[in-house]
Amino acid sequence: QVQLVESGGGLVQAGGSLRLSCTASGRIFSINAMGWYRQTPGKERELVADITSGANTKYADSVKGRFTISRDNAKNTVYLQMNVLKPEDTSVYYCNADQYNRRYWGQGTQVTVSS
Image (tube, rainbow, N blue to C red; front, top):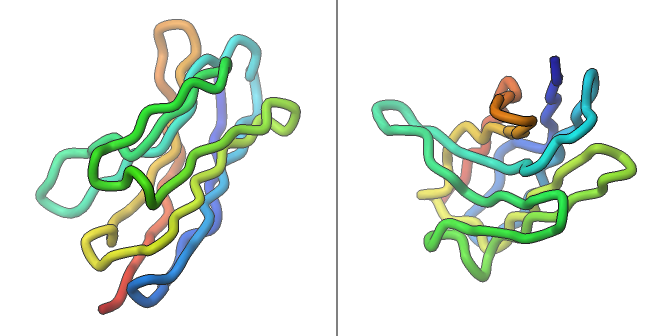
């Protein structure tokens, strides 16, 4: 089992920044991709960004140029630097980790952007 603990959410004004962190623990060997999804009520969970163990990254079009995902393999931690935040970025952000054919999820952290 892999446990994921997120931190860094909160309330910020439009145009501001936040950094989310997610640390993996437990049976963490052979974790490949880690990333961030977000979900608002009534909508499907959507990919924000992910990063492989080889540091290949992928971003949703809506966050390209504003968000940056990074990973510290020594600390088993993935980060999401979010800049120029918009009210439409308001959501619960979930960290995920892929290990073999299984996907693990964190508990989610709320990000609220006020206009």
